[in-house]
Length: 465
Ligand code: FUB
Image (cartoon, rainbow, N blue to C red; front, side, top):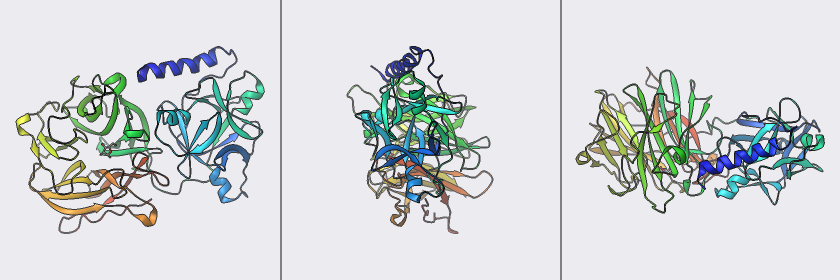
């Protein structure tokens, strides 16, 4: 069963579980993402918390210990198994999941089972403003407390069950004190850009084993602090005939009054190659549609993996496509933005280059930036070179962004840079292992300042929490 069919089956099961029960609550479409607490509706003052990695509802008051408050605080994030539902991440980076129907806290392994076990879909709760959380993979079961323990129980159409399975989403007992991640949840490879007075972030959806996520979301902001989630803008399953998974490292550019999304993807057919595609939309938040119905760069045509696209447009309006893992390529794009002359493809691999090309121009100098080492390595880092044209030749200048162990920041890379319009202020978006508890497939997105020295070199970027 493909992904869309499975989602339909799950939604119809959710629907069936409510339709079969006349008094069942209506669907609550969305939850606020970000740091929250969840209060029991029939035991006010008791909050969903974890203790010894098991879910419970316990009293929490302003006089409770910092640990108790922290244990009763979760970050509501896009569902690990579906962006239409939600997952709940504790301060230690672990997720609420069910196992043998007991609700517990565990690290995300990225397997389909874990992601499904850790995903819950909200429906209206027993009282106004409350929610009940339906299991994504067992849609006839809901998160419910009994004897103050949290279980995944089969829905019963009784007032008692409804109350036991209803929670109010409240302000968090432990508010977020860090700037990052700038978008809640697991995302990576952020492409940051600016269109018509708003900043946009286009990341890879992370948290999947082997980075298998099938869809991209878009986020926008006016201040680089508060980001609006615009939902899924391209879903490989239904939207791209030649790709099913590995929706990696998108990059979006505006040209000809339209928006072009460059992306990579793999097929479920057993062909392990990734291909690079381009999709188009009239809006920066999509929906995007596959522009060609086939890859723009077929994996295997050039050395290295056909992933990590990026487009730089020079002052004369000419656009250049960069891509590649293992080998860095560049080619001028034709004016249609969806084709190029294969004979014009150049290999611009620099010493240390692994992936994630990014090009910018400042004061007439071109800056070619990339990521070094493997994204699963805590030493994943960003380096750069300068040149006099978008095609190089490039002179390596060194590493500008790397781990900061005193703050527990590791695996800093796959960045992108945006200039604050009309200024010489530059901001860099990049991913790092999620703090705490992350790794190369559980990454998060953050933004820091990037400054230039008087001689035009880039000053070391200081990663902050
Ligand atoms: O997120 C999947 C892959 O990991 C990206 O394409 C690479 O750049 C690395 O970040």
